[in-house]
Length: 401
Image (cartoon, rainbow, N blue to C red):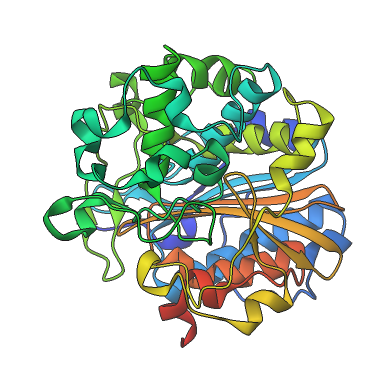
């Protein structure tokens, strides 16, 4: 089957165009000279210019599919999808196409936990062991922690700031035996296992249903009908498959188990509404909204991954921008003050959200082609201007590190 020209595939539902003023451009992706940031131009010009430049960048780097949203305060000012959800069948990516949220799940889960903190159900600094009926190492999934007392001191704050001392994933450990590599709270090292553990405490210790809590407190609150922590059969009708760095194809994984670390399926339209709501602090007290984005633990590692290998390195650039762990986020100082972000990644997925606190402005990018990570810095500069985001830390291989 012959493939349609790349630039012909950009889809934004008409209702979205009418609602937010997005203009979808389906012409040849000629280079458009625009002085960044686009926020200095009118909304209509921003949309047209951004569409054309994104398509040019995608064609240049062979990015198969990418969806983008821009949030300005209470408004979603740009919402577009480009390229394909499945190249082989020439199926276009759309703003309501189901995409893998990856570790953006962690940000949504953290925001849900903070609502529980506001209500006095969870205490950020109460050891998880206080909410479990028996010692953690006596549960099957955590038996390898037997003999190490650090588990007794582990708190939700340690987990949400990635300062647990646990590896990112247990399968990276010899014999898959988890262990503490440093005392909880001592420093930063990204850990998905910590999020699994906090989910375990909520479910086993407090008797909560994480899937139901996420549905009520996040997905329903922010009007996200096409987002779930678990695979749904209706997702199959408009689903984005994945593409690796070499362009090879990987079908979308049907994730049947709820995972606080990364099971969320979602759409760019739903993510735009979620980040707009979280940016505004909906569902949180004013003090907890401030706590969410406050830098709790300095990040001084040379790079984000692999986590344990680099956790004790010293990177001066991190200190210069005050790179720190918020609660489920990374925070740092940009030219205009506090910024915060969350990424999501696997071999076929590249996601990134960057928000500017003072401007109350966010850029949300979801890609079913991991090559999109190559062009993320250019898109960020176009939309937000200079942010000081540490690309060298998140994607060192893509930035000559």
